[in-house]
Each structure stands twice: as structure tokens, then as C-alpha cells.
Image (cartoon, rainbow, N blue to C red; front, side):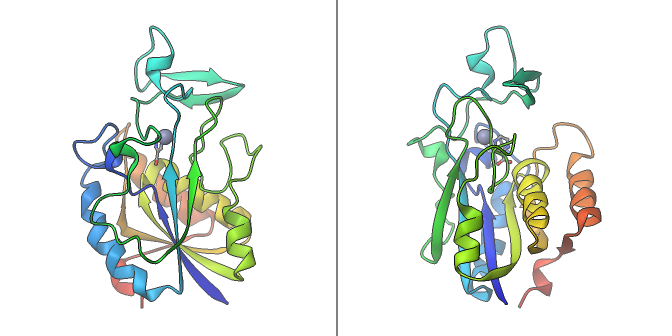
Length: 205
Ligand code: VGL
Ligand code: ZN
């Protein structure tokens, strides 16, 4: 049995003041840094969009962030431009410890489809390589932390469960977008009823 920590999208644009902020997203950084030494393996995902990405409202004339469109046959929430490749907003938070990261999985690179999950695009057509990375190191248990609870943390967790990993999500090491009131709480509830254990950071180690 091997455990891995998966740090989801701990990037500047998801921090307060960023392009797509989560409330108090910066508060998770010290919690995540404290958790890292408790895991033999640490992975990170990075939202990494081209400027012409289909999830950006700016690429759909007349549309505004928060609206939902059909993008290649699936429902897509439109977002402000965020995590554009090679920009400062796409970089990890400057205080995040990155020295122990085994691999960074970049996602959302195809302009035609979004990728909330660290494992697959939103239509489950293409894998990112994270599953192979975990399997090749005999990982059986994953612990998910990061941003945003109601999007990328949620879909990464649901895919990890579907792939057969034992999954824990650290509540105080996650923050959400909360486009609608209650989105964060329903995300935790969905992850829990699907099979993830929702824990506090004090329960780790
Ligand atoms: C995310 C919305 C758009 C996330 C990424 O990291 O949760 N949310 N892109
Ligand atoms: Zn994105």
C-alpha cells in the first residue's frame, strides 16, 4: 500500500485577488505544506489553458462568466480568463513547497474541452497520465487537497474513486468557488456519498 498526496490547482489565479478566486484559497497553502511530509509521494495538477480556451467567456462573443454553453456536446460553465499558459496567474502560489513534487500534471490544454479532473477531460475522452503515474508507483490510496472544492477537487476525487483508489479529502486544505450558495457543501457531500472520506488535516499523520 502506498499513499500519495494530490495537490489540485494551487495556483495564483484561484487565490483572492486572482482571476477566478476562491474564498480564502491562500489559507490552504500552509496546511498543504504541513501535510506534504506525511506522504511518500506528492503530485500536483496545474490548470494550463491556451488563451483561446473554450471555457473562457472572452472567446464567446456576447457571453459572460457564469453562463453555461454547449461546448463540443457537453455543458460548459464559462469562466473569466484564468491560468493562461506561461502567465503568473498559472504559477503555483509562491509559498507552496514544490521541492517534493514527483510530477506536475498539466490539464485543460486542449482549447476544445475543459478538464476539471486531474485524471481525464470533462468528456472522459483523454487521460492526463496521472493514473499511470500513480499505478507505476503502486499507489493505492490518494489524499486530495487544493482548489476549487466544487470543481477540480470534486472531479479529481470522483475519478479517483471510479478508478478504484481509496480516497481521502482534507476539508481544511480545500476552498471553493461557490458560484451558487451551497456548492461547496454539496461537493463535500457528493464526494462523501460516492465513497471518499472527508477528514481534517489534524487527522493526517
Ligand atoms: C477550476 C474552474 C475552471 C478549478 C479550473 O481548478 O477548480 N475551476 N478551471
Ligand atoms: Zn480552468
